[in-house]
Length: 282
Length: 260
Image (cartoon, rainbow over all chains, first blue to last red; front, side, top):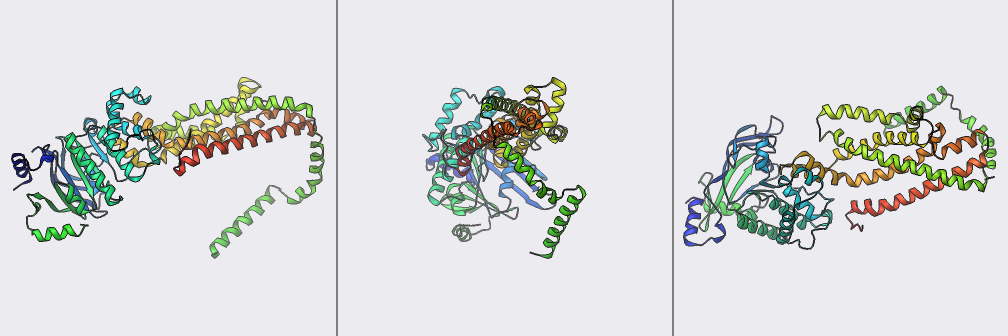
């Protein structure tokens, strides 16, 4: 049974209320994508994947396996050397003016979080609204009242109420991640890309952050593509998990009923997958 | 220490000796001149307290010149530094601009002062123009280097949102390079006060005018009053700069709370 069928089934029996936002339409499609930074060594090879709207898709792999590059290709910050990619019916390319509008709807949280450390929490969150603000107003840092209200709401949503005027460098690691999530949500995104957002956190904080994203997904009909280091965490929160090794997708697994199923080759036994699950790292 | 390092040190020492010989810089002359210094110092102790009033007002004029020159120079330098940053512009913009800024920096402010005295006549205005020129060249260079050193992570993250270049500059580049700017402004003002103190040598206003005139007429006691006022002012500015740095820059860099 495919995940889509599983979703339809879940609709009919109401077993997965949190999956109510899933649609059958594909948001991201990659066909035979190759990528390289130096035109010699490919960091991604023959990547084929299809990500449906509304799902939480996890990419797992060791350091240097090409996971972060995959995210950069999805949001157009890197152009693949070969192959085709479509994101919401468009070819991602940050230098293309047409794609700039699509970029404003893709929330990207890099591993470093990319926060501006010398400004306040709310100023960082409001950066997510910049594509909707006129040049003069944004130069004067004059945001409309409704955008400020929205930013305050998101700050509350991510659990930073009362800290909106605090300078970002004063926050803890977990709080900074919350700011980065709020900034991404401020974009009113259709897609959220997060690169190892919980990898340096303790287990409790990591789960809080993952719950926060899962909650935002449900509320905002959001598709999330998240890069993880921890296999267990990925399997716990994602609808599907792709494992990348040395630039190649070696495995794609997802939930089917109460089982984890190999969607890549179909050759893995349940036991092999469970062994992988218990290994924590891919 | 390895032989290679010893060789380098020996070569540098040999270079200093050879060049001193070439330009006739003989340390024996310094020893011979010490008695002359004692004469000057003795005369300098005979200060004329009546002159402190004039010295104070001319120092105020000097500070005003330095302040105006620093502020106007920074206002001109900031937009230029944005245009001269390699990470924000094409080389067709930043290469010629960097050339112009390097030219502004090449001449010390006293040479600019001579030029402006010829242009606008004697007085503080020529001195202010000289300070502006040097400040523009210097602050623009420090700032474009700070901009180029801004952490690329927030730049990349915010660029990925699809913002315009002006938005990126306003919301990421300026806030990220601002702590450096405050430090640079303090340094520049401090430096400009010292520079303005000597611009009077070429008739471009300020306290230097009195110092050079009294020295010319061998009235070291009178010159000493003015030099003392310069010294005290510079010490006060230095003290205030350290306080401001501690409060706004050092704490900010250490991640401590800054009370504004």
